[in-house]
Length: 270
Image 1 (cartoon, one colour):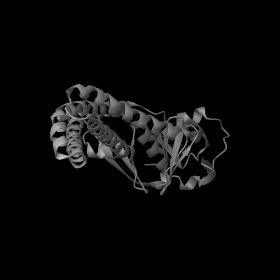
Image 2 (cartoon, rainbow, N blue to C red):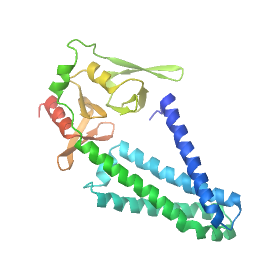
Image 3 (cartoon, helix red, strand yellow):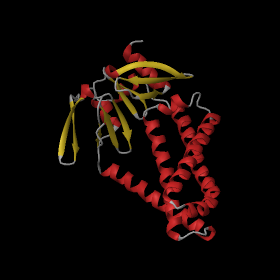
Image 4 (cartoon, rainbow, N blue to C red):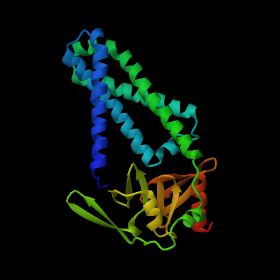
């Protein structure tokens, strides 16, 4: 899958790196009075701690973007989320111990391991907070309702230019994407990500614009942040009470809200 860089994505990457550095030095500062190892050894230990925390968050985000969280956690209850969080914490703790064991001398490892319970406490708070936040966010999304297709059409101008292709600027190149090749569109801040079967592209545009200009008999908004090309839908299946999972031909899975699924059924005449 092609990686699309823009000012927006670069800002996000800078923010992630900044947070990683801040977390590293904060944990280093907290543990310095307790440590009996050199400052450089402790900094290396704290860097591994922070890097693994952010790697864990990145993996969770990647799975969530593909709809995999809904399949892994079924039913999506707070108990199941906490259970998965504990499992992730155990994996993270094991990786942290392995990293410092490989990077430090046996003597320094024996000294640093005394600080591991504090690392475990801080890491546990961060991971469990993120898991609970994701659970609350999923509940909020589940309760969000979309207007019906007919209602959306009523507020749109009668004559709108229908897109046949979308031009996306990537560095010094301009990529032309045919609308028929788009599997789905996903909101990303002030941008929209266009997913094809083999790539993704970032477009500085709004979801409202695409809803107004995409063919209405081909594209349907199944979620507040997602528009799907019905010709790219592979299957629809129930994964949670009154909620459907849409599997696309590129392998991606997207959950549909209650109103979004109704709009999809209307356009598919189910």
